[in-house]
Image (cartoon, helix red, strand yellow):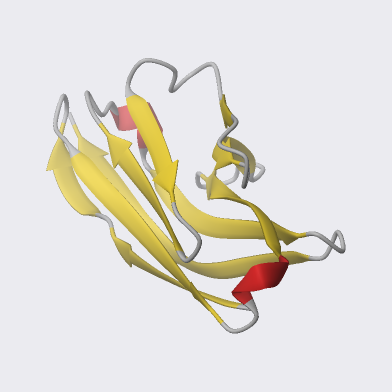
Length: 113
């Protein structure tokens, strides 16, 4: 499985951005899809995940502002009311049914105050 992320960019405080990640390869092996992020000098952290069955998980810091959606081949993260503390490199992520984790390339989101 390979992941290709798109979206990101620069937005003002309170603005909106959408990230998309397309999966290719043996997509039947995909279980969970989602997004992590890593701010400068910080650890990579969970943003949101969605299982094949439709269950979603969000970091407390983004609940009510971010929405994750997915189908068999794509996962989308809609980010509303962005804040400067959301500035980070966002990584698309998938966990296969085997337990293997696959990462996409990072995409930078910058929120200016």
